[in-house]
Image 1: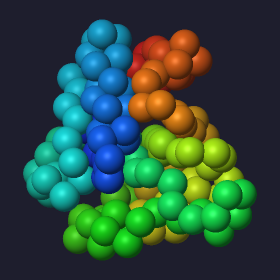
Image 2: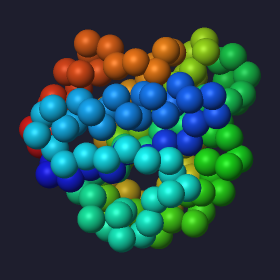
Image 3: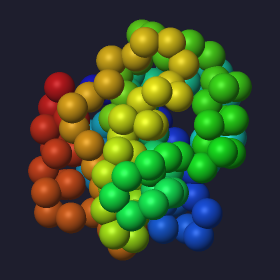
Image 4: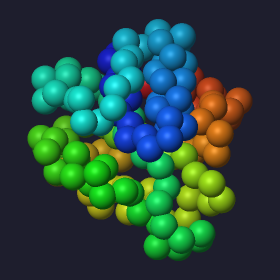
Length: 140
């Protein structure tokens, strides 16, 4: 991975903090990375990135029927086709993530290559495991 764009939709700032920490860790691993709110992403910035990290907060019931918030879905509808992009999904949550990643995947435009790596945080901070995942992803 040479260039990554970390896109997030945050309500209280927890997801924004997590996205910024992901970008910071990518930079420490030699990746040209930038974090920004999903609604500020331009099509040219999307086109320039090798990998997109896309995240939002978990909305819905405790264990099931979890879904991205409506504004997140609306922003994704405005993004061009992501079929040629590698995608890493991330979320922040209060109790569990449940079906969140499956629900997020359904709203991605096109048929992108979605990584099996899933990143989640209750606090908005990177864990030691998160840093290890980023280190491996950065080497690809």
